[in-house]
Image (cartoon, rainbow, N blue to C red; front, side, top):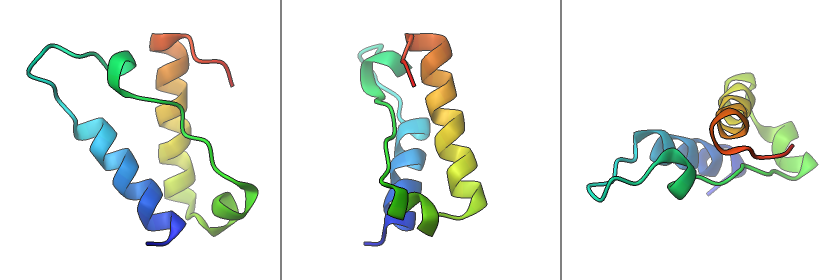
Length: 65
């Protein structure tokens, strides 16, 4: 699986995930970190989605860049 597809699958899985045990975004999500090569291979939309995910984590969970 290429890095583009892996990133997209991870993003969709994390944003669509719901827990019946009441888990929050901060309990289940982790910052997305990519190598420079993976970022170069990503589409603009994939990069925007990953940035949105990490910004949400910064706001809700206190993640540091």
